[in-house]
Length: 472
Image (cartoon, rainbow, N blue to C red; front, side, top):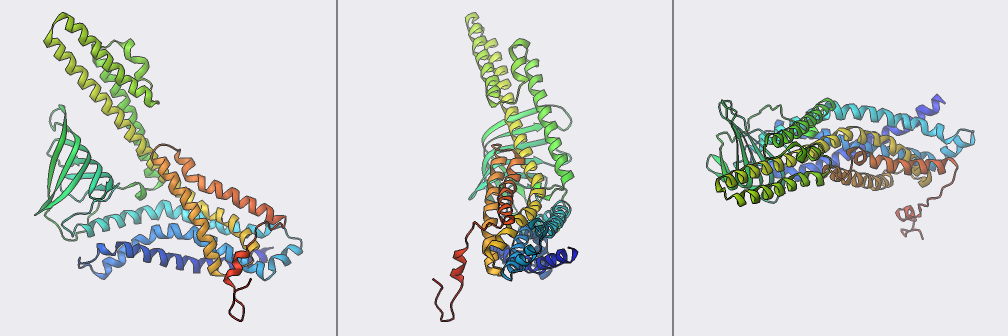
């Protein structure tokens, strides 16, 4: 038994190594072709280019390893099946589960190794790769703004951009980070960037300026339709900077958990601020708001709070109009307007925090779900290799590519649904493993009963007769 296990593991080792090298080369070449325009005309040294390639090898390996496991399993069992070794082993009385066990152990070892890699090594290399990419971009006057990451390269400003449509940026947030200036945060729905001599100009549209005094607790909100922010830049050469700000793909398990807990605390603080704002308003009694403001789970409830405040505003104003007290009417209007605007803004802030929680939760589960795919691909590759009875690299690569496209289709779709709040992050990230895992168990069950219900007649298309004609 031990001899057979070592033999099966040895059959996996060489195909796995070969497939991993080929896949890494293909993915790295594709990545370099897509990003080579960032290096042209910058005068970068060879060492910088090699460092950039090495740092980006991390995420390439995270993708290539599970696919290499599937290719290796198909090749190993395909060759053993074509040489009738599987038949000989089964004839000796050994069960299919005993043949599959060494391959599963191989998949489990790969899964454990990649889980540690994704949690400890990948985040650090992703972080350094992003910083180096930003350093390279700073050599250009028209700075390249990365979507979804904090841009820390600008003096006294930290910028976060939600999305981008051609030259228009969406969901822009600008934080001030100077020590001797007031705390200032600018949010805008959209904006564009214009390059000027010695800096850039951000043309912002439809936003709010939040400002808190440095020495006082005075808080201001300024709404604008159009606003310009001029950012001087005096360093357009490649300088290596360090940053403690990390994106979701640059964090370890512990960092992400801490980030999620922080967002939950912010949500609770915002809810308490809403209740405090309503309680502070002496025009509204406690019976009018208590039941509504304590329930934030439903979007309809949130809209109901704002709608009720608007109705009460109209009702109270009508009462005052009967008394013909214009000053008090203006005062009531102003108080209700500020209250409704503030509560509406807080509800939007809660929604933003919840989206961020989903985003980090997706990345948290992805650290485990993608490595676990190595075990799932063993369950799929072993029976398919036996049924196909082909151990060639080209055929194994074609079958693997098909299943990997299906896997990543489910994974990307699930991530998109989770980011929008339409699907739980747990379900979205584990759904591909669950679906393909069921397929693998189904294939293993029929293979164990020696029922080859799948036909691979299409593989004959790759065969040629000696006279050069295809088989019929």
